[in-house]
Image (cartoon, rainbow, N blue to C red; front, side, top):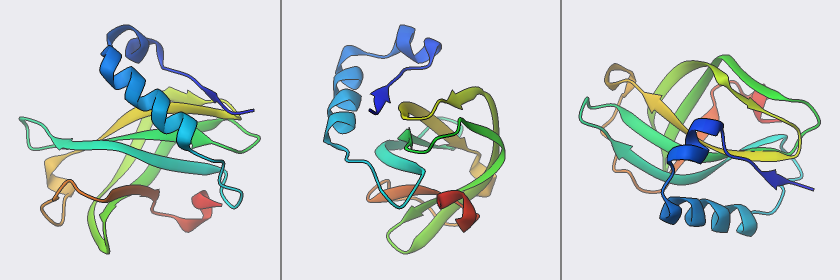
Length: 131
């Protein structure tokens, strides 16, 4: 059975409102039979540095731990790829049958288009990762 887990820094600092929103999204998400990893959108923003912040629920429906070592991700809005970046995140380790919220920060220079911050989705650049 899928469980929701918060990384320790998140667990200490997340607002109650955001925690409740994440829990609601988690409870409403059905496992995706065809994918081991699913990025369920939570929210997007641009910070004061012009970086794109994409917060998702990283859902590991597979049987192996997920790690992010030089993993290339893309942020899409509708049919437009907005940003692409390779992430190495030692702190992000997601056990099998576990979902965890995470914010991926795309540097300003990696955006090809200005985001509208609506209808966005995150995916691996390499389609093999999505299986």
